[in-house]
Image (cartoon, rainbow, N blue to C red; front, side):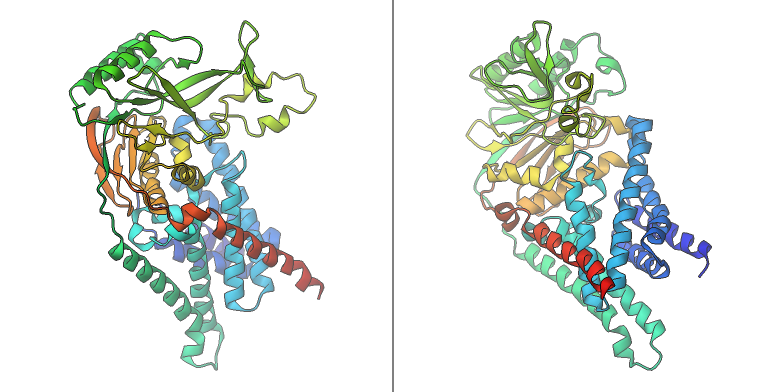
Length: 521
């Protein structure tokens, strides 16, 4: 096959991958995409060849699914798309080597799939984390088929997709290459792939059918969607207090005697919150919390000082020489006059925080790392308490795409999940739709209802089986109350965390080690 046909396979696979992600409801295209990629692998003779020719596939996938990154920052968005595509091409080239070394279809399928899943897992862990294109996320619109992630976590779907794709491809390849074999023998891998998928889908449907979502406990939650324009300084307002007064006036008409807690989106409180100085906005919110007798949890920049503790290596100094950091946070105002906060744990690389700043700060360079790093990084999952005692996190934006961050909140006692976010930086693109849909996977993993408060939308609620319950329209201003079910059961995934991913890591190490062992033999 000539070079042009390799490029055609690659680009076609990338287009199929791109259209497998929301808002396109075609996750089954992933199977076709990886069948083409495995065919491409067969035609490539080396690691370099596989990486080189697969790069267009991953570039097309990244562009189609995440083009909206350029709405927030053109340079950063383009750089992220190019770099992520390159990383994917390298991982695929490693899969290519594994497939070439193992003759058994099942071994090649399982070990090559484990290499990709290990990449996805490690990509969740480092400072350049970008989990948006985890294969499982494509199935966020078809949650009926992936209910088993309450045991494995989302990466179980990624493994299943790749395992099935290879078996399907091997069956197709064998059918063309074997001249004298029986039809059953030729198609046995294909039949195995179809069977694995059907069994997993049937298992998910049985789980969904038998899932008991009845609960006697619920909490009344008010959600705000203020619809501020993120592209205008202070959203076009003359100061930070005017939008706050407008928002609390709108909430006045929504809050009832049943309301137990309210959530406002990321950056809903402009101007920030200073740990040492109580501003007019702080006093106003404490007054409203007391008036409504309801805790208010809002997104805000939070300035935290290290006065009685050792500051982290990367920090700032104020004019008086006091160490501090500022965080992208959720801040709670309680009716009794108390306040609490949660500092965002997972920060968007480059946009919110310089990657590897902590490590780079150890180098003997004349750089004020606190000044150039961006937001401080939170380290502790904290929950907010409603009137009545129910606990919930307010995970901030990017946090919600990381399964383990949400899992940690349930381990600490969350009865439901809340996501506060500002997706307005992406405009009316597929970005905000994907962000809402991906939260459906967090609901299944934890078997908790997920409540979303998004600046411009989509706000609403997702039930514990991953189904949308409430969805607001994008670019609308609204506030509403929801009765949110509260659960206590801990799923297998919540209890044991990344057990499945560790197994994938071991398989990947075995597969990659096998490349060199078998090569020497």
